[in-house]
Image (tube, rainbow, N blue to C red; front, side, top):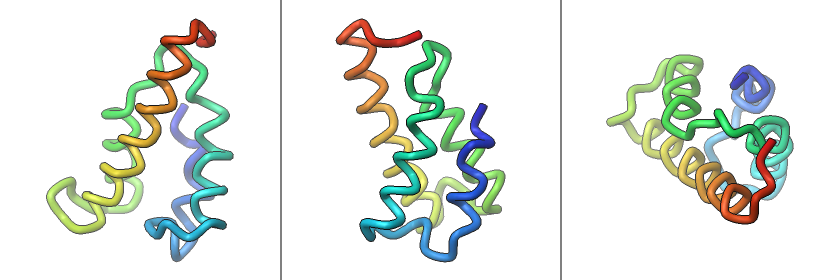
Length: 84
């Protein structure tokens, strides 16, 4: 499921908060965040594995930030009864 982030992760600036990067992140997130089985921890693990960064590195912290944002969206959708 998290393969939808592969194109996002191949962009040199994926870890920044620049508008184009965040736009690409949320476009990918939109493809999976609606699913009840979405899991932010699994997303973070996938992103770390795909990029080769450990969770305790600077880039791992950026992955954690993105996973937290994804969880916030998922939790909102869950609370609103909008998951599929």
